[in-house]
Amino acid sequence: MKITWLKWLLACFSGSTLLMHAGERPNIVFFFADDQAYDTIGCYGNPDVKTPNMDRIGRSGLIFDRHYNTTAICMASRANVMTGLLEYRTGCNFMHGPMARSIWNESYPLRLRRAGYRTAFGGKFGFGVLDDPRKGGGENTYDNLPVDDFDFWVGGIGQTSYDTSKNKYLAPYADRYPHSSRAYGAAGVDFIRESVKTDQPFNLTLFFKAPHRPTTPDPAFDDVYRDTTFRKLPNYGREAGEHLAPQHKLGRQYPRFEEWGYHTEETYQAALRTYNQQIYGIDVAVGMVLDELEAQGIADNTVIIYSSDNGFFNGSHGLGSKVLPYEEGSRVPLMIYDPRVPEAQRGRRTSAVSGNIDIAATIMDLAGVGGRSNLDGQSLMPIVRGEKKAVRETLPLIQVWGPAGTYALSVVTEQYKYIYWCYGEGMEPQEELFDIQFDPYEMRNLLQQPSEHPGLAIMRHHYDIELQKWRDKAVPFNNYQPFGTVFDRSVSWEKKKELLSRKK
Ligand SMILES: [Ca+2]
Figure (cartoon, rainbow, N blue to C red):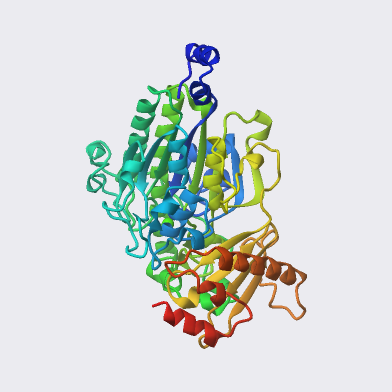
């Protein structure tokens, strides 16, 4: 909100904490992309892409180089981000179930609204909210979206559509912006214009559909990458996956390397062109919002957060799409720009490990909302302000979606990633250990050498602690409790198989 000197003076004399707080508390804008890989933004170091507005955020703020989604798929990741809780505590993913209203009630948008923020949601919400999550299906419908929990709503159902007119809340923008990415930007601008007329600080959350499939770039930007030849990451191709655990080939990610055209030069370039064109559409929408904040004179009291719900394998290790715990699947961009932070602390990068569960904690911290000790996430603001180098030593990565062959629990630290693939049908359960600092493309499993790597004992220890937390805290519904045993390194596959078949 805009605070005038008159309001400030009034607040001082009346002792009104409401007005005082409104002025002190920042507005918070959170942009969230769908399936945007970490190397798709100019300020992250990719010379092939054009993302001037995302670069404005990164170059003025803090760029996180080791930010992960604790579950790397749309529905679960959105639930993590909203609540600051790990998947076994949100109880929410495809094939598991929707979110219980009691859990949703403690999400950041609701806590901020209760604390006096004006709140808006636009885009792909991605999960349903039900009083009893045992009764519901997976994705949300108009009936189980929490529309009334926001002051302004332009969210859509299920996977949403790139066709603006198909979202009944967004449809008024369809004539001017038939493609949804810029329509979300325009809706964000309208929400800002309404909010500055009030005495409340605001929180705008925009969950873009782009660059998720089906490939549907905005034709207005057909020229942007017409002449671009996109590079390939050093771990591109089938050969760069041969050293990995065989379980990684058991999901849909493996055939998608060919099905989605990453396997030939011509089809790879075509896939990357439309993928990045969709990201360009988000960038334009981000620019619309950033420009409006400046036009309204509130940019210096508005914090901007930008991230993505999961990563994307554009052919890395011979894979397509997401979900698996390797870097391209689980690691994404995160940029936080707080204009109130001193200039010397801005325009930096950090290698501190952070997770999608930290975003809710960060937003609540910015808004001055207490009671965060129950969250799995930590506020990242001490890193943004340069007060701390890190806020967590370890982060778990959860994968309990899709075929059982791809189930894995992993732990990352600033140095290592440890992956435990529990599946043992016709193969051995597998452990993998990567030194992410020296081998960020995961081309060398440190356990494929004659002597035991000293990092193994450290990471198994962290892993066992994470698994114990799962046993202690998993919700008693939507099939999360069996995984406390399924991911136990000492339990036989026969026993695990019995548990996995029983859940159905
Ligand atoms: Ca996604």
